[in-house]
Length: 481
Ligand SMILES: Nc1ncnc2c1ncn2[C@@H]1O[C@H](COP(=O)(O)OP(=O)(O)OP(=O)(O)O)[C@@H](O)[C@H]1O
Image 1 (cartoon, protein in one colour):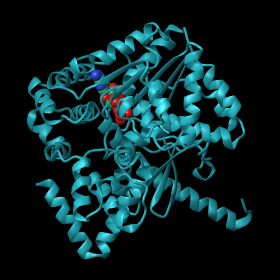
Image 2 (spheres, protein in one colour; image 1 turned 180 degrees about the vertical axis):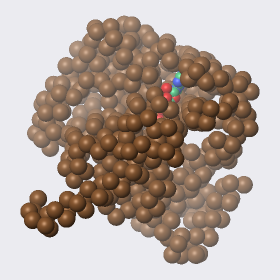
Image 3 (cartoon, helix red, strand yellow; image 1 turned 90 degrees about the vertical axis):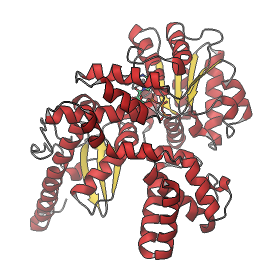
């Protein structure tokens, strides 16, 4: 830091900016808490800290990569919208892992209108962003960061998931049993695969019998690359191969990542040969994961393969009843039935809708009624009414610009293909309730940042080019009707 008046001014300026951001941040935290509820807020969001603003982007810090990934997947869009509402110039939120994050507001934030003062810990200018793990972490960080809410007790069993549930229980009771290794769980988005994996892990850890490593396939790749960079691949391999149970979530992420697949294949073989348990989840069955190497697909399919089907009305009702009962808020059966009829996409959305209702009831101290439900959830209900799918959007957009449907997922980057693909991503964001990572996955496993870029690019182009804007609007109307 420079000395003298100049240095002082810089510090004063930075502090002033920080105070302003803190005020906005405290309001956002109050809103978030009201929306998601105290428990959810304390579990996932409370440790978040505010970082600097750079043009249209604000950085937020989280203390671990697990939390960062979770918050990004679950709340990334919402955080962006809330910051944009507070400071319209902010259009993007960057989530980073920081050792000394300035924590989020920790007070009892009673409402969005009367937010508490922010507690600023380390000055924002000193927060250290750690984007890539260092060798020491790769060596020491394989312990399973399991979500304590995802247990067998909180998993509601019904026809669509009873087989997967039974298999998961069996593996938790007797890991590495013949016929159950690997356990391959598959099914659509938000249907409980991660929940079951965490439940297996928690059960085993609670029993204290075995060491468990759980990570997403994305994290597996990330750690593998970091280990290569820091020349600690041997340690990484040894660490992985020393666990009793290895669980890899969302394996489809490894499609097209040949080196990481190769590493996973060897780890897989080493563990299974040594009598250790592997649990894997993916969005498709091993035979349908066409971008994976044949030998890996074959090995993945030679244990127990269990699918989780789309929810039925009965299961949705049971899940809603269980979650409403756990919240302590009285939700009339009529409202639960209404939600179960209307929100059919997946459990995550159903749960999100119920949480919002409950937060609303708690915040305003009003009973939950059908009328209030329609009002509070109008955006979710609207999105579900349309029922337009990403696949439909891709098809319509491809037809409109006369490109091949496969180019929606291909790696081709020429404008002729890339522009329609960006429009399809934009429309998917506008017309479906899918999250950015989910959209990215449907477009050839692209990263969520690519989707953000596409959405922004299409919006810019629509502003600059009325003919293009008309095309996009036409497509939107066709898809909505
Ligand atoms: N049968 C169930 N009972 C209770 N909660 C459930 C059930 N199925 C899913 N959930 C809840 O729905 C949410 C989404 O589930 P989860 O994250 O496990 O889905 P997923 O299949 O792993 O999705 P993705 O494909 O996006 O990784 C979680 O909060 C989970 O607890």
